[in-house]
Length: 450
Image 1: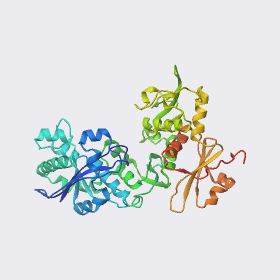
Image 2 (image 1 turned 120 degrees about the horizontal axis):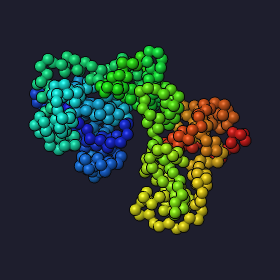
Image 3 (image 1 turned 90 degrees about the vertical axis):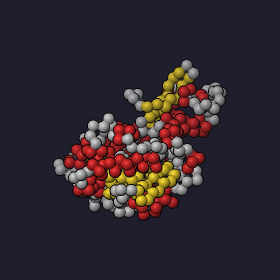
Image 4 (image 1 turned 90 degrees about the horizontal axis):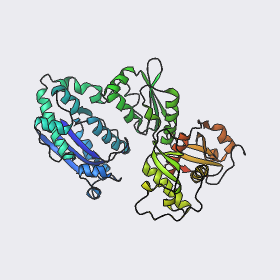
């Protein structure tokens, strides 16, 4: 039995997408014997470009079931069936991530119609679903909707099965790691479904080939060994061993990944892997006075790195509000919200670049020592990050409240971090988005004064 599936999702970064529509057609090789189609309430905004592409709007999903309400039906329908999709790694990954959030490890044998179409129908202009439907005269109504795309995939699957006279699909394809979900490290990483941390892939000489992080380590590691891209296949042939380092804190994983990538320079990582924050805050002198811009980072180092232009503008807006400044006196005009009133004058605003950087630091970090806390590796543990006069000094794992109160002991327990601006930007990103919290709001003396 084949479970032919298509999902529509919110898009965004891997691990952050949410499903907004599901369609499943149960196909026995000759006919559709069951089906399930529903919108899904994602409880996160649907980006405008997704709304335009799919036609699914916020109002459409307002009363739709949440994923946890349909999860049991999906499990029951697809149990014992082959998971089929066009570009299956995408749909399968997003569905697995939704199940991981529920604490369930969703595993199915997977069939991707793209590589099979390339094998059995060579010479196509491309192998996107729309192109194949046009070239093969497959009905394809309701494009970019789950039911329309899944139904078209059923027709494509029938053509592929008809062309498979040597029974390659059942005899070879469905036994490969990419289909079974099983590879030589599957048993080793089995327990890391919801684990947060780093992972290292080594060759036979002990050289680190790749470093990554995730809050779903098993799902993330599986992607390396179940992908059929040229780069993934090359990596698979070289990897001899894996090591997982649990952190409990995704911020700590973010920090350590950056440090390890700079130190180890793994050949299979890309340069961009070092920096998740690719936009920056820049103070600039203009004819209207000193203003702040938020843009992509090129050669000029920013005052602070942020995840997006929107995040940077939001941070500057909070800063302006905290000082009772008019945003129009702080931000370059092209970034101002439409409803922003004209400036009220620049009284109290920093006048020089040095003053601007110092004022931003004063907004971001308390005087003296600040301690921020995140989850640890088990329920009884926390990880704390110590900032001294705006400098991220290091981190330590603690279990008792007095471990944080005893500053000299905490200082000795710290694992020190390199003093690079990017690590401070990472911490700021988590603080501003309230993913970590300050646990000692009262100001403390600096280490030097202690």
